[in-house]
View 1 (cartoon, rainbow, N blue to C red):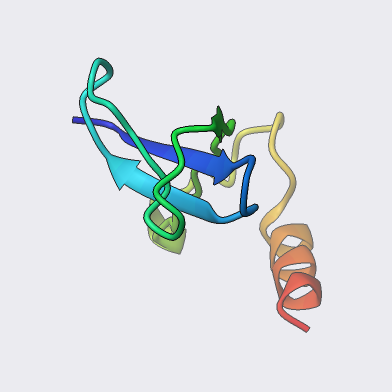
View 2: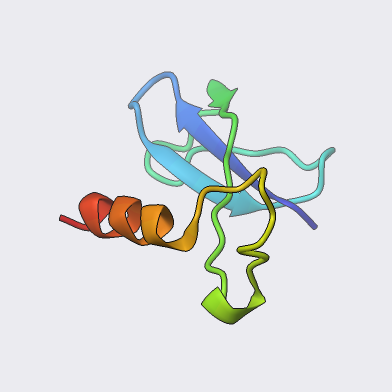
Length: 73
């Protein structure tokens, strides 16, 4: 079963739910069925040793580390 992300139009509560597509979904906060399905993105963590740093289409490892340390500030 996939995880879907919703925002309630009545109370603005955002929530995720593991559900079947045909299942009736309601806001856990106000119990409204007046929902917007949100577009979700996913993120991953990669083990540095598994990256193909020799690929010319990718940024180099030093640039990657600089961007990653800048983002964590």
